[in-house]
Length: 292
Image (cartoon, rainbow, N blue to C red; front, side, top):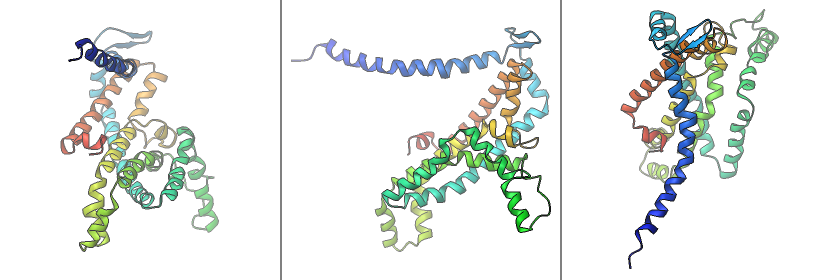
């Protein structure tokens, strides 16, 4: 006997209902704010607040003032450099942890996560007593007699922004790489050795290609996070290390120009999205986010 049609349709309806909470969550907290942001970017800001008079004036201001383009390019450059440095720092660390025993892996993973149990702002502030005029680095250099007076250029510049962002986002690069390396079958490395491949050849012909999904995933995450950085360049960047987020925030908190702030946000989102699309033409995004 065949099952009644209603009994087959009912489970399917239940499965569809399970998607409703997640869909509503995305609609309310992701799609709706983005639609509001785009809509607000066409509004007009006055001394009395924001009016819903639609115009392209905000985008004309952004195009006419070269400062916005300069800071945007600087933001992309800093984000790309931070991504590259994070990769150089994170890959050896992830490789070292993945090659340890199970118990040792757990210890090193806890140590890797430990700094991230504190607030993002606290982890950013910690660089002030390290790099300031009376900070740890200057104290050591003065004690060793390497310098005769404290160095002022250790703080409030683009270099400090790079260092702090690399420190803050290292986990987002290390973890995907570690997961890719940890899933690797050790027999592949043994097979490469049996075929006469040395350590370097084994790494570049076996280990690195198999870990590329983790590398690409970490690079995408760090680049996206760095493009939207605000707290770190605000606290440590000074006048030369500011990023696009430091131009957007004052439009809401200082000048009360919400419409221009929304337009600047849309520009940043579009530019970063285009970078992701260009990257995705060379590498399938499914390979990045789904691990190949």
